Image (cartoon, rainbow, N blue to C red; front, side, top):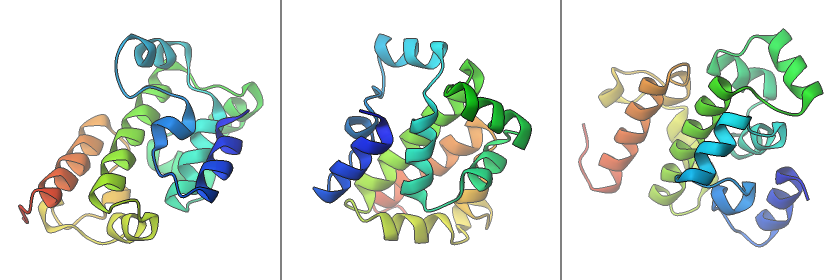
Length: 149
């Protein structure tokens, strides 16, 4: 069963755990091996569905050119560097899901709202580097602990 198919069945059960839905581990040797060998394309599609963005939109935000995205879609797998970014984004989404208690609409709204602690940037616009994504994740963690900046 593909990650996208798992997402559809889990979504019906209101399961918002991206790790269980995708079959990818958050950390540990299994996660690192998955990243090095390249994450499957359907994990990327799962993220697009969770964030309610098109594949082209998310790829652009991650710095993946359209021609490269087309090749990855055909090959059904990303390379290690792209997989590392996708995995980091999965961590952001997982943290956001916890903070917003499984409410994807609330997470999507927050990602599309300027964040003062991120210099007024939209969190969704801060996906092109791992450092930016970690800043977004750190912001979510501060929100969860009641530290508003």
